[in-house]
Length: 296
Image 1 (cartoon, helix red, strand yellow):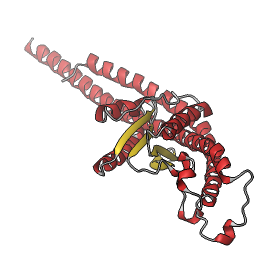
Image 2: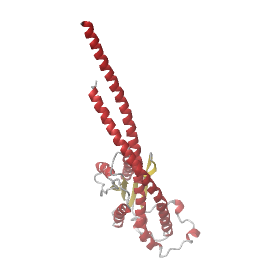
Image 3: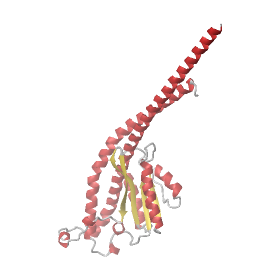
Image 4: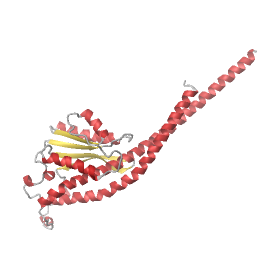
């Protein structure tokens, strides 16, 4: 049975841990409000950009595929796939990183089973540490995440430029982005979004010639696509980074709240055990005193 001194030390240690987790929960809650507002503000812009590019791509469907920019139509092959995985640089966020890495691993294993060549570009230290252990030969590079700071467009620009360069040189044929989409503080949904070639939903296709004739482009569609496709790639990555940052803070706030609750329960259990042990010691001392007095 632990001594009273040992129990007091445990209670003090758990109380100190609870103070830390409470402080981290408050910090995450404060960051979450800003990150959530940024993610929600970026969604309409990213969606509008995607729709505009879909219109341009649909208008270019009649052109020769070989003449289209690689970021739109890919390289014409379907052999080498790049998987970009967005995770956090810091832990203590519950299953935030584990969930997105699990989704990425499912995609990677499926592509490898189909005979595809897979390359991985992890953005964020936590995801990189896990993926390097499982796929050391597939990692093409490791890029730092936001490191807990506000997401800047320069980070999306760096990632987008790296992807665009690999597409232009023919190193990859397709690119998929895996990240956590923010729903609320308790829910983050892993998403697999195609980046290259440009995904065009069925309802965005220019199936009706009369609708297609309503659009006129100046300059021509090819010139617009060449200028706008890299920008669209950066915008989609930026929106995903904002979603991931908001999800990280929400997951950390939830995890630290759970940790604080568990610490409180542990303190209650230890305090109860401490009181019972103390009472048992007092009872034993009284028995010894009474027994000694009767012996005299």
